[in-house]
Image (cartoon, rainbow, N blue to C red):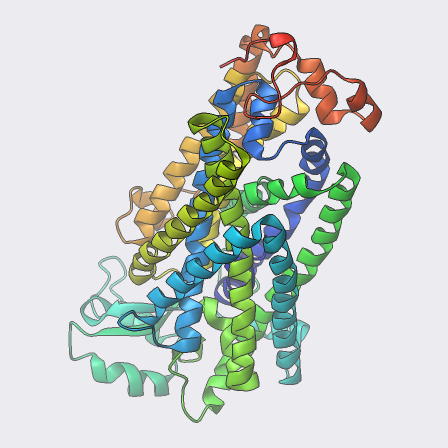
Length: 568
């Protein structure tokens, strides 16, 4: 479920583009399984509902809590599908370079991916998706491992590369209109062209850039030195922080990724497929080991790209049309793994690595389609539209929900192409994943933590905290979207004047405070069967067997004990 386009392409691309700042992505993605292991895995499995909204509805004895959970799950799924489908279109463009019929390569990749996922998710269900994911994981793991081994065979040494890159100024490839490139800055008097020339080789500038400077409307791609967000007096290199984030954002990004991972709905749904809470814990521990190894390899691949791309580009007799390289720097950082595969192993090996990238996307898209279909088919259809529908009708509704989610994912994939067209942001796939993680970390995890670990959490407290966190996260996503397309809602965010671009450092403490305060003020409205609910969450197997049965109002498996009314 977890190893996505952001894992396979994005982490290596982020390290390649941003150096140390890019390492936070792999670190946060792996470390997120620690709070998942410590705080969520066993309680959710012991509780034994079918979906996260089921758990919330049963915990608070309220259909309103389940409905809010359903809406958050669908929002997270939609945001998380965006970078996966964008990666699907990009990889198809790389491998096939042309589309089917009148469609271009990107559109073909998006539509084929959505169609394949719709078929095998609807036909195979959870079991079929699981077997596909197991095979796909080892395929993508083998792909990233073999790329690193090929790089080592080509002379890459991680510690030596990091030492060499320590003193190398970090630059990025940026598209410019010639008229803007040659316009002096009113403060410094320098033109962007002068800044670019200071970090580019004379040969490349004379052969590729100078001939186009006579046309003000021409567009060129040049290298620009990056300034440190930690202070203008700091020289920014590959091994120093500050390429993208200021001091507060360094912390906030890690908090976003760690908490976001621990509350992803398609990961949490997996715990309901484990036979026991003990097995859920051991499964999470195993995944933690595998993710740590995988992201260490991805980071090594990013560093290998920084060291080897200039040399490999210079040795090519004919530049590959699939990869745009400007003076030894890849324009699209997300393509560093495929570039290394192509130049070190040839076209056939590129096909193997592309298969790993496609496997990563299909694996995550499959999990997202399953959790999205569960929210539509189980949490909405079965609970609100036809609560007493026959089993055959419920199965058909679930399959229809998979198809709906597949169509939605295709639409998202086609829409985000416009973001990539307008954005100059390197490692865009990794950045887009933070949108979903911000929503989970701000809007879901604090409320879920309190619901599991503080008996005093009430429905009003939960809804207040979750509503506030979701609103803050959506404002962040909207601001990022506007900034990427060149129309910032918060100009200070785009310029770096606002020291915090991720909401989590502010939103999580605020959500916890609001939820705690409202719950304390509303402490007289706790569910009547809270003791039985608490035993179901934290009790031993024997205690749970002896406790009174309390069902979820979001479940079709029972009614409240002694006919007690549901709250909300």
